[in-house]
Amino acid sequence: MKTLVVIPTLLLDCSFSAPLAWMFAKHADRVRGVYGFELTRDMVLEHEQFIVELNWFVELHEFGLIVDFIRTNNRSAKILFGGMYAGIRYRDIFQRYAVDYFILGDNELPIRMFVESVAPQEIPNCVGRDFTNPISYVFTEEQYGDLDFDLSWFPSYFKYRTPGDQFLLPHIITTKGGCNAVHDGCDYCMGSK
Image (tube, rainbow, N blue to C red; front, side, top):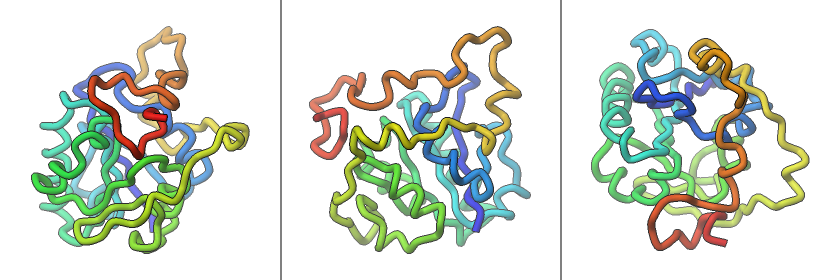
């Protein structure tokens, strides 16, 4: 089963989180990424699984439009959401939007399992509307050496990138080990450690 990753943009440069460059690197055959403004009805009908990023509060309105568009055109779709802002407000997002799953804490293994169509109730760190799995997966420092950086699954990144942009993968340095959101911290996030 193929998964469509949808990234709200507000047409800003660097509007997606760099971990996406390694989370899907080994699954380019199973994952396709598009910006929210590129999403079409045909794309929604071609996929059963979706991952919708919600990194920034300013993307919340577009996130809601994307989720509604997916639900309107594919009622049986399974929608996993994630991102920095989503991590802070995931309970509220479950209440307001027709999403199905969220991953607490580190997500490299849980995302891989979702893309490989493992039942969400069996995925560590996964939360659904009616279940919460234990936070049992933690990404270790040793695993950094195994990461591949590949955006072949997301061709639009290169299509819309600013000419002359010196950063091939923006924000890589800030994505792990430090959260720049102003809040008290989440006990499940690597940034809080």
